[in-house]
Amino acid sequence: MEIYRRRLGKDTWHWCTNCINWPKRDYVEVERQMRPTTYELCDQCLAKDKTGNCKTNDNPSASGIGVKSQHSTFSFIVCSILPY
Ligand SMILES: [Zn+2]
Image (cartoon, rainbow, N blue to C red):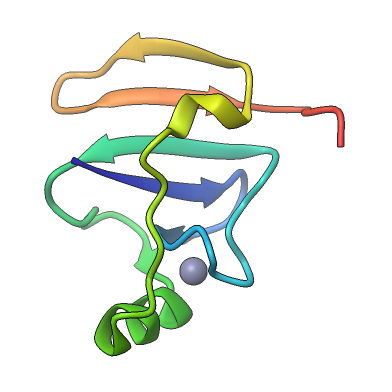
């Protein structure tokens, strides 16, 4: 499973934690096996993927307090207002 994050109000998914635009607050996080087909995929994450430079987050819940609920096809975590 891979973790995908999208900034609230933005239409771009990120999955590399070393992406310059990787959302650290006010994001929607999903865990799924396939790339999301809704919204856009980040150009930077795609480029990192191609060059093997993409770091993925294998401990997703460590970075925030989230509300977790079950969606029909994937688990769904919304995090907001982290004290940075
Ligand atoms: Zn990205």
